[in-house]
Image (cartoon, rainbow, N blue to C red; front, top):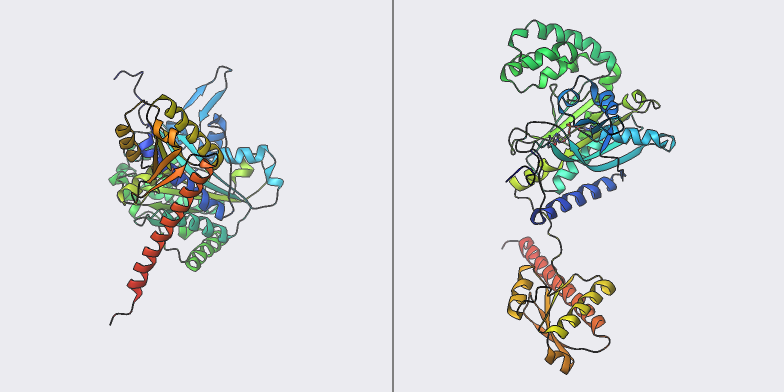
Length: 450
Ligand code: HAM
C-alpha cells in the first residue's frame, strides 16, 4: 500500500467494530466526572507554541523532542496540543472564568499529539481524558481527584493497577533538594546515559525516572525529595495521605515519581499497570499551583490528571473487561417486491421519527431469506416482512427474534403506534423476566445451607 493510503505512523483508525468500546469508555468517564462536579470544556487542537514551552517547560522531552510544531501560512508558530492542561488554563484565563466562584472543575476528552517512537500503548496521536480543578489548595481535593481516577478504573472493571503518589514540593524546597541531588548525581555521572547527562544541569529530577538500567541503579540510592520538603509541603502531603486513608484508597509512596512536565508542584501521582507492556502509566497527574499565575493570571492553586484512552482500552481488553454493547436494531422490516419495499421504508421512517425506534429495512434488493439472515446478523430484536399479500389482507406478522414468538397485527391507521407499543411492552416484559431469573438465582445463592 502506497503512502497516500496508509495512515501515518503512530496513528490508528477506530473502525465501527471497535468504536463502541470508545463510546462506552467516553460515556463512563464523562458520567463519573460529572458526578464529581466537573463540566466539559473543549479547547482547540492547536495552540500557539509558546503556551506549551512556557507551561510544559522548555527543557522537557515533550517540548524539546516531541511536539508537532509548524509555521502556519501567517508565519505564526503553532503546535498540535501534546497534552490537555495548558489549553484549559489558557481558555479559562482568556474568558475570565477565574472571576467565577471557585472551585472550577473542567473535564475534557481530546486528541493529543507527541512525536514519540510508537509501540503498544504509545501513539503519536492519542487521546486523553483529563480533569482540571482550580481554586483549592486543600489536601481534600487532591484526595478527591485521585479517588475520581480510581472510581473510573474500578467502574470499568480494571483491577490490576496500582496507585503511586509522591510530593515534589514547592520551588523553595525543590531548590534545596536539587542542589543535593545534583551533587549526588554528578559524583556518579559516568554511569548515566547520554540523555541523563544532558538533564544533569537542567532537570536532574527527571533522571530519577529514567528507564535505562544504569541510571535506575544510580537513582536507587539517590536522596529523596520527601526528606527535603518544607513544613507547609510536608503538612500538605500528610493531609493528602490522611484523606486518601479516610476514603479507603490504597497507595504506595514512590519518591521517584517526578512526572515529565515542569508545571507540577507538591502532590504528583500515577496509576500504573504491568499488564500492557512497558507503557504502564494509565493515568498521571498532580498539582500545579503556580501555572495559572505563570501564564499571566491570578495566583490560583490547581490540580488534575490525564488518562490515556488507548492504554485504558488496551488494559480493559487484557483484563477481559466488559464493554457495554450498543443497543442492537429494534426491528428489521423486510419486504418482497417494489411497492412493499416502499411501504416498509415508510414504516421504518415513522418508527424512527415518531417513536425513536432503531429500525432498518432492505436497501439492497435482497431475497427475503437473505434479508432475514441480515436481520439476524445485526441482532434485530423484532422482524416483519411486508409483501403483496400483507398489503391486500391488511395484516402483518411481527416476530420476536429472541423468543421466536409471533403476533399478527392489523395494518390500519394506528398500526405504527400499536407496533411501537407492542415492541416496548415485549422488551419490558423480557427484561422483567430476565430480572426475575436473576433475582431467583441471587435468592437461591443466599438460601441458608441445610
Ligand atoms: P502525562 O503523564 O504526560 O500527563 O499524560 C497523561 C496520560 O496520557 C499518560 O498517563 C498516558 O496514559 C497517556 N499518554 C501520554 N503519552 C502517550 C502516548 N504517546 N500514547 C498513548 N498514551 C499516552 C499529562 O499530559 C498531564 N497534562 C496530566 C495532567 C492533567 N496533570 C494535571 N492535569
